[in-house]
Image 1 (cartoon, rainbow over the protein chains, first blue to last red):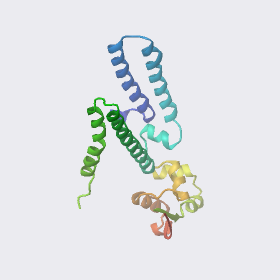
Image 2 (image 1 turned 30 degrees about the vertical axis):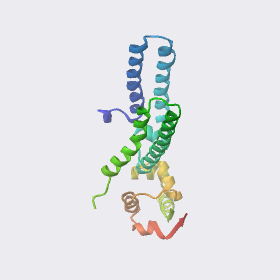
Image 3 (image 1 turned 60 degrees about the vertical axis):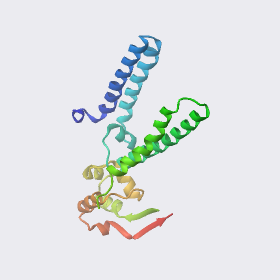
Image 4 (image 1 turned 120 degrees about the horizontal axis):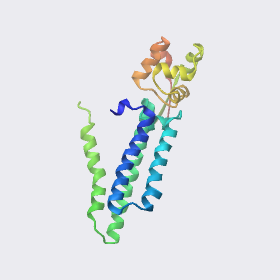
Length: 131
Length: 73
């Protein structure tokens, strides 16, 4: 179904769908108020509009937004994702150390710390070469 | 290790009177990728290198010259 949507509209539609879910949860939890109509809804609409405008440009980032990448752009996207993974892993480790230092509940931070290691194992199993 | 393999893509494209956008459309890649290949910043995959060679009707080793390979640390 997503393939029938014009590439430029895919990212804005994803943002709007996720945004509607988040706004619905916010309304269910806190009711209709300024944080919802003053912050959340404008943020979602602006983000979707931004993706639409950005997605129409002739650049590598726009191709990634449209999910309309060639091999070089796909490689760049992988490099960006790898960087995000590294930063998040370091952030999880720092958050765990802070949680230990302030003596708070450790398990959520432990899960965040264990996930990169487990994902690395899962990735090496999934993508190994069968020689 | 960074490899720079010199290529004749720009020369061949200019000889055929094609713009970077036109070559990109023929090869089903972006204009930016053609620019990167021509400048040697990006080494195309083997399938793409063969597509380029077939398009210009040249042997792949004429288009991408491994003898000009430069490696840097």
